[in-house]
Structure formats: C-alpha cells, structure tokens
Image (cartoon, rainbow, N blue to C red; front, side, top):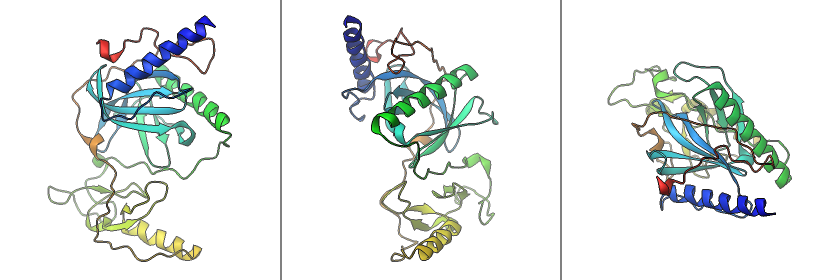
Length: 274
C-alpha cells in the first residue's frame, strides 16, 4: 500500500516535470491513470536528414518533441495515441542504423536508437503498452489506414513523376498519398485523405486521378477541388528545422513489480532541477 502510494506520487512528479519541460506551448499531460513508462532520445528521419528528438512513453500514448535545451526544455510537442500506433522492424539503412518505422493514420516516420539493445527495448515496451491499451479500451488489434512515409528529399534530385531537376526555384514537395518527392507542377492537386486531415492536402496528379477513380467506383464523387487553391491546412514543417544537439540517447530497463507500471530510468532528474 505504501509502495503504491509512493509510486503514484513519484509518477505524478515525473509527468508534471515532462509537462513543464514543453513550456506553455505543450498540452497538459497529467491525467488519471496515466503512467510515465520511460523516456529517451532517438533520431527521427525528417525530410532533410535525421534529427535528434526526445521521446516520452506513457501507458496510453507516445509523446515526442524538438530538443531546445537537452534535458530541460523542448518544443513542438507531438502526441501519438498507442491504440492507433503500429511498429515495423527495419534493417539498417544508409545513415540510419537500429531503425524501425512508427505508423499512425495521420503520420508515419522512421526512428533509430543508439544501439540494437535500445531499439529492442523501445519496441518491446511500446508494443506491450499498446496491447494493454487496446485491451483496456476493448479494441481489436485492427488498424485504420496508415499515413504514407515520406521519401526523404535527398533520395532524389529530380521529380519522381516528371523527372524535372530540382533547383533553387524548382523546390521539392511531397505527395501526402504516395510519399513521392515531386515538383510543384506535379503536385498542384488537392484531395481529402480522411485518415490525415478533414481538409484538402497536397497530392500528385497520378494519385489524384487514382483517388477520383476510386470515388467514381464507389459512387461518392464530390465537387471537383480547385487544383490551384492552396488548402487551409498543411502538415507542419517545424520538424524540418535543423538542430545542433548531438545524439545521446539512453534506455535502461528498470521495472516496477507491476509490469505495466515501470520506469526505465530510476535516476531520473526532473528537467526543472537541471
């Protein structure tokens, strides 16, 4: 009884410390029944290059953000609900070792750990928390359509649709449906992808034609979207800003008696105390 009370108080302090580290721009994280399971720094593959991000695993969600001051301040908070999350193991790639794929209906991206052991620990704990969350909610392990993983900018010097070379004036864009790197001319079309946004997002011409054919076959053709009109909503590019901090990830497998309620780093230092 005393141990449970002590753990509850320590867990509350940890969550509040994480909440405060995101400053006023972050969403409140403290909630009844929510447990901070672990934290660490991982590399996230962004459009231009891998960038270090801080990740916090809770028993119901995965939170990550941009590192402002290592161990103290973070920004651009993103929340992935575990019931919508799926992981896919990947082989080592060029510039990204110990990597795997995180997929959700709205966002999919590659991340990597500093070592194989850290990668395995992250994947195991995320999967265990995800399954417990699905069981708690009474959901089957059936997922919605996932967001396509964007192909990095550096993967192609030419438009992957028309082969026109990219330069200072001919900038790279991404189709939200197929993830291809395309030019502006090939991605003027807009379409509503319900699993990503309720507003039109950028798609390439080929995907636009394919989506229109699907709507025709389903008898759900809508009024034609203007291909010149930019949508109100576009995915944020804040994550593409460069960071100068080095990668220094950790992930210790410390467990409490109850498997679900564990905290990987028993020597946790609250950000406000650094």
